[in-house]
Image 1 (cartoon, rainbow, N blue to C red):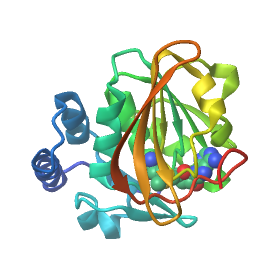
Image 2: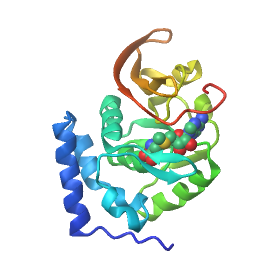
Image 3: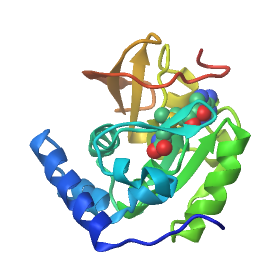
Amino acid sequence: MAHKFVDNYREKGARKKLVDKLKERGIQDKSVLDAIGKVPRHYFFDETFWPQAYKDIAFPIGDGQTISQPYTVAYQSELLHIKKGDKVLEIGTGSGYQTCILLELGATVYTIERQENLYNRTKLVLPHIGYHANFYCGDGSKGISEQAPYDKIIVTAGAPFVPEILLKQLKIGGILVIPVGDEKSQKMLTVLRVSETDFEKFELDTFRFVPLVGDQAW
Ligand code: SAM
């Protein structure tokens, strides 16, 4: 692999500053901050762009997609309240950065990406840098029913509505975190499954994600 995976003092220092910035922006969960402090985000960038890796910005990763902004990754991760051993479905693998954060939090991760190029790349890179998830290629707007139910589901692309089929794949007591809105902006929603038939929905801050494209989406 041509890519260099070295984590020098420069990158470590930049990562610590990023964690401080996320704290200032309101991220409080220590386990999430620790995970951000551990995962070398520059590994997901071409070496030319390493100076960008620890800025709190989204960045293009090819195929018209982006690695999510660290604040957004931390925000969604905090809402999931991950406990060690939680079975988590991630919809929109992208670069795999969010996947690594979920793994650092102790989750067992099932992650699905619809773009074959990204799926192929991330499935190779993550084990190479020490992160082991279960990778799927396909339309995640329908979830992955054969692996359900999940303790937590995270959607990392903007959906037009909450797909019913995802709610059915949550355990009772499980949480779905999903940005819902139009192409320009989405509200972060968390949905808690309180019983077989009952769900509690909470609407939070506004974000801008690339669209969730699929059968139960755009
Ligand atoms: N969490 C990722 C990261 O840390 O790099 C960023 C994800 S990016 C903002 C959203 C991803 O969702 C894109 O890679 C896109 O191809 C993918 N996506 C969009 N619709 C999808 C679908 N129906 N199923 C699976 N992946 C989808």
